[in-house]
Image (cartoon, rainbow, N blue to C red; front, side, top):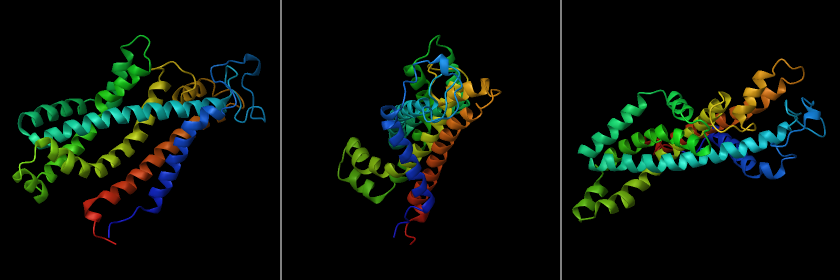
Length: 275
């Protein structure tokens, strides 16, 4: 009997589900528009009108948090969809055809992995005068696919030696049919684990770039909120403003790691057959 998900994995799944729900419906229930400034109510404390207070421009903190969740969810989902597609495709081709294809793909992977990921992202985004969401996505996708490619290639190299793959080759099945009918479906488990860990990592990278002032100049991203909190940390009664986005980022990262650890144990071949 295959090992089931542990309690920590379920906790991570619920926590991540909460983030997804907040990202989807948060802006719809936000009490205010985060782009509307109210200078008469700057640094307002927590109250019935502003549950989490306001910032230096009088913007409702709760509204910023909810809209920031939407932005983080959108960015992470788009980047994961692009990088997973590219990485799994290239890794599958490299593992199946090997030879020149494998050498080219893996040498590109080695080159990209030689650079610290966050520094490469900063270098790409900083070269544009007014970087928008598209530039941010391109920077994160530039090296985000390499992890999927390595996972896919390693799995394909092992799967191609299986008897059912050899039987499909002997029966004259085309390379396309073998890859999409016999190989790619068996990659879903390891790729899902990679996606889960990457989700938390993307949230951290996006927040880090926004904290440094690099990327789309939007005040209500979680990283921009942290940057503003750092600037006005001395302000009496404003210390909680740093905790709000910080706890939100921590929530998502912990959730992704708990779920990723559980899925890794679930799909690890060493655990199969154990009750």
